Length: 250
Image (cartoon, rainbow, N blue to C red; front, side):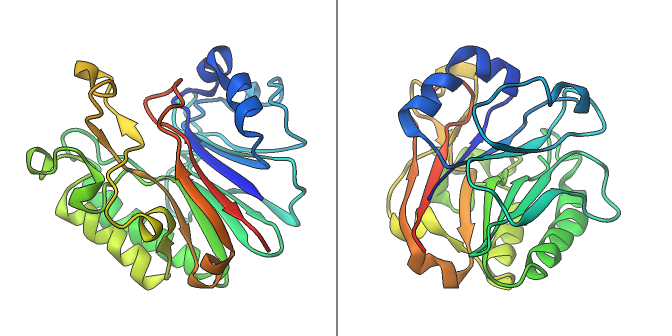
């Protein structure tokens, strides 16, 4: 089973660029998307080449949004809204029997860190509680909007107080791994490797590989033995993020 996750930074734009080529090259069984930026009215009209499509659109059109596209029929699932949080289309969950798959787009703390407190004190604890309630066979993937360790970004010293690398966000991610618990699958298999999943559009960052690893596959410890491969596909263009993948065998 090949699962891909990709923050497409606007699904319509990627479909017009290289989406078909990407599907042809990798043939994912399941594709988790973040930042689809679709309104609810624009979902049904899109032909995306998958048998099953589950979207979670933000109340505000053109913002956020997640989706899981699958050629494997899930047992159940759909859009998930955390109680007490704004309807920003951030989670889709599907039950595939052997595991539950969660596609998430974690809130960005923003340039001036105006959402840092919300993320640390509200979203973070509630998201951990939600994952703990799923029963211990979980794969959570998506854009977590945090580089966990210094090795996960090209210039850690210059970004100590930047959104995505604050002490608070990194500590919150550590709690996610420890308290749910979950394993950062790619890092567990590549402990010393520097490879990134997001690059700013400014200053030719991607060409110079001045990037951040903020897109992850996290898995319950009991599922790690089923991992065949986990990869970052930094040669795939079309967004400011690149896809990441997880192959499982049950």
